[in-house]
Image (tube, rainbow, N blue to C red; front, top):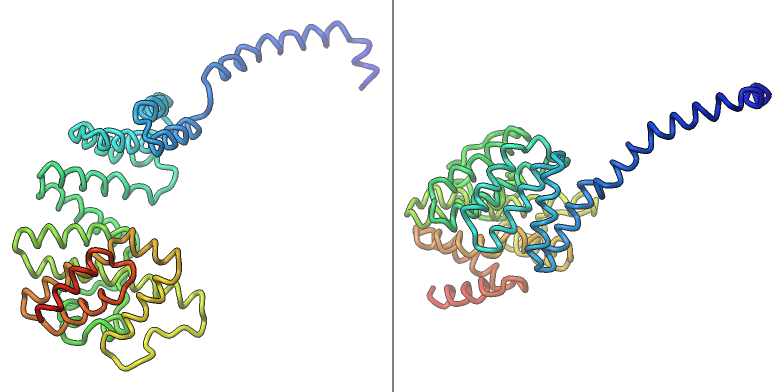
Length: 305
């Protein structure tokens, strides 16, 4: 082989030069394109988090020009517009992201522009449209992770009858992506005066995070038991306190709006005459370090009992 190359040196050189001229333009065209889309997206995210909204928008628009991370680009463009108070532009960007959701690299991200869109619709005063988007999120999750369907009214009646400890021992509601949707729908229906619907959603906004926490603790600690005392609310309180002692779970509680949902649920239960259940939740809140203003409001509510 070496000998053949030596004897055909001129031919090899000519072929090499032809290949070089063929390949170099392609290499130059790639270098002028700049970094790949995911790097542009990350630069935009960093700029967004640093408060450099104009720079972030530049990178997100460059990402959109590439055409391969369209849904991500539109989602983050919408976040910039929303941060600038341009709600109409933000709404359209989120709708564009949903339209191109198949380009999401992470499939779970399909929920993100819908959550953001619903929030913007609320800010725009478009409550009915927001409710429809939140309902779509819940429907998507149920289709993606089908579980035994239990009617919301049955769940609520069991909670009212048996209380928080027994409820969580019997039922483990699922649907991590639906937590903000249930919380938002709970408050929206409260504002509309539709108490039954509001209580159903707030119940799930409170119990889905608790159910997920129980499952997490069971996977971490084989000997973990949720029920360690007689049924009442003490086991639920112990679960929340144990969660607060864990940095990751405590952050999860905060992100899930756990304390706010507990307070609204308790307030609505009191309003609807379920005073025993309301008293339990208000009492639980007063023992939680992360409760913040919702803890203070619960203490005020207890003073009125």
